Image (cartoon, rainbow, N blue to C red; front, side):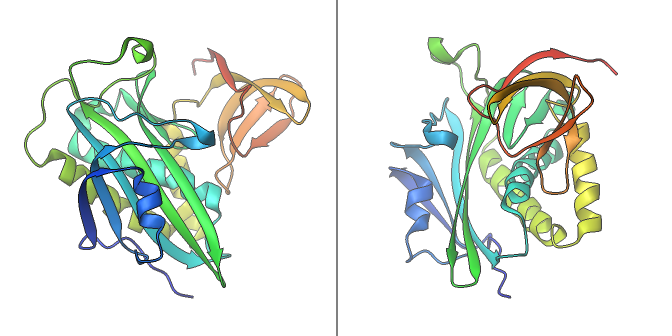
Amino acid sequence: MSLRLIDPQKGTFLEEVDSTNDWIKEPSQDAGSWVRSRYQNKGRGRKGKVWFALGDENIIFSGKVKFGLTTIPLPLLSLMSGASLLKAIYSLYPEKVSEISLKWPNDIYRNHKKIAGFLIEGEVQDDQFEVIIGFGLNVYGQEIPQELKQIADFLLDENPLEGTTERIILKFIENLNDSIIQLMDPSKTLKELQWLEKHSLLLHKIIETKIENDMVRGRVIGYDEYGFLLVLDQNGFKHSLMDTGSHFEIIGEINE
């Protein structure tokens, strides 16, 4: 099995690109490489949505990793990618732990507004998974478009010191590589999931979603070993969600 993690030394900096995920997906970019662009013209989010990078300081990043087909469940890798960015933010801004959390599967929120989103794309090559891990982070800005003011925010309230975005990227790469290695050990994976549950935006929230053809309402109780969201419904049945659907909605909270 050939494992290729992201190499901090194999980065490319671009002024402008259509999509960092598309750029690094090209065969000419080896596994282990990564790219950051200042501007992105056709940024893509999950489920075909458009990602707009906001503010004066932001991060638009994509990296390429490779591992064996049975090594890591992709939903778990998606979850741990978000956790890696969350840990990077915590390590650089420990005072923000109380207000920054992860909204499953991998969005980063400041209080109840989104500051970062991921797009994970994978394809099989022979007996290997080649996975593109892309994210955008709104670091700092003075203005948010009117149509996004209720749902988007910045990580920082003040203009960051020079080199801040580079430190976030390098810490993210370090955390992601560590997470990928740990995901190969089920006992360490459980410990990671327990840590992440403590910093989950959805934990103890009451959500409503559509499962097959039925609307289900229940309380979020954590994650399973594959990174799926566990929801306990009003009848005491436990459901595992692979992803949020168009009907997914937070409708309340239980304080514990």
